[in-house]
Amino acid sequence: MRITVLGSGYVGLVAGTCLSVLGNDVICLDLDELKIEKLRQAVLPIYEPGLDSNVAEMVKVGRLRFTSKYEEGVAHADIIFVAVGTPQAKNGAADLSFIRAAAAGVGRHLVKKSIIVIKSTVPVGTAHMVKEIVEGELASRQRTDVQFAVVSNPEFLREGNAIQDFMRPDRIVIGSDDAWAVEIMRRIYAPLSRNHDKLLVMSPRSAELTKYASNAMLATRISFMNELSRFAEAAGGNIEDVRRGIGEDSRIGRHFLYAGAGYGGSCFPKDVRALVSAGRSLGIDMSILAAVDTVNNQQKTILFEKIASFFASRGGLKGKTIAIWGLAFKPDTDDVREAPSLALIERLLSAGAQVRAYDPIAVHTAKTALGSTDLVTFCSSAYEALAGADALALVTEYREFRTPDFDRIAASLTEKAVFDGRNLYARADLEAAGLHYFDIGRGNGV
Ligand SMILES: NC(=O)c1ccc[n+]([C@@H]2O[C@H](COP(=O)([O-])OP(=O)(O)OC[C@H]3O[C@@H](n4cnc5c(N)ncnc54)[C@H](O)[C@@H]3O)[C@@H](O)[C@H]2O)c1
Image (cartoon, rainbow, N blue to C red; front, side, top):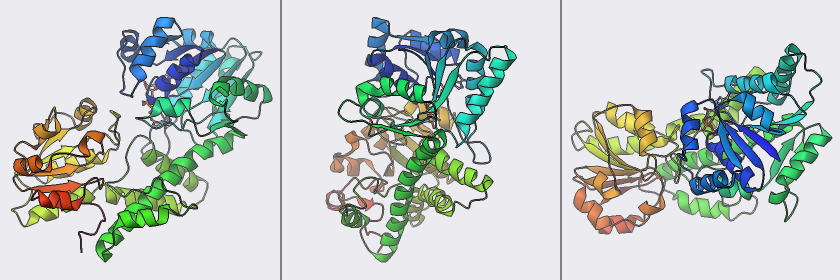
């Protein structure tokens, strides 16, 4: 099938590439001309494992092209996927300006029967809004004869595992009231549904809410465990034992129960807030989700609080140097949007400390997010970050941080303290190396 994907970010580029791998003829369109120019030269705007080789292969076989021109992208396609950003607006709601612009761009150039598929995470009612915008553009061109359907098809991929997630989805949610559009969607996704039917067909509004509900549930589990980890720390329990104890209950399950330094990323924070905001405008008090956000904001300060408390009896943080391992909001991505590392770095700098940071992938995005400062030194290896540092904070659980040389860490750090924001290490190993060790909720507070 002939497909155009609007927006070439984490979702659009992965979806476009995977759809071309599945045999479709795909154009990826982005308004950012520099991004498109680089993509044409096989320079990817994002890091995602395996994406570069797939893009190169699909470009080579001629099933993947790039453009910044709506005229070209819309004329090409029978199916237009919308994967533009829906960032947080100032009031917490989803900012739909990119969606509106994309819908208008489609409406201005639509010439044949098409399906517009919304992959972006959008508030309930957005498919309806997109339909109205496209109808308005068609009417102003006196082309109301052009038929189209708008389908909601939220994306559930995880950065760092995006290709695998797209190709092997747990479920495929299709929100549509048009039987012909559902049939086409069924055909597009048939290669991913061979083992059993993964399509869940529902109304566009239910599909839109399903995506928010999914992210909100996952964020809730994390905040729940983070809140309990604080309780465990104060009362003397071990949150890891509690995690195992509840995770074995099949009604609860094992996933997404890890206490840590708070969730970040481009989805959970903004989607939880967008749902709270949408509830408010409907007169519904989303008090659980408001609390999920509050708990997460508190949790993002927890490493700083532990570091500040440790240094309080050692002359304070002014003039100290803290090494940070991991800047991305999760392993295997260069995405630092709302990353706990950034919140920690900002606090450390305001307390007069300096930072030596290392991340195997996300240094370039962290540099942009933090702006120019002499107080943060970006290092090219984990051990280089320790040179001259007083303490180490582990923020992102990359595989390469799992079994470090604790003797080497102890020899490098002046104050010999490790703050483990992901409960990656065993206390006994660090204490045997002469290190002070602080984790999240495993009992060292009592
Ligand atoms: N990142 C994820 O892990 C993830 C997962 C599931 C769903 N989502 C949702 O998918 C959507 C996209 O997220 P993302 O992380 O890929 O965003 P992103 O910021 O990485 O990419 C968005 C792209 O859209 C482009 N764009 C903006 N306006 C445009 C327009 N009118 N026409 C064409 N291109 C335009 C931007 O230049 C940018 O390249 C969001 O709604 C997000 O919530 C993201």
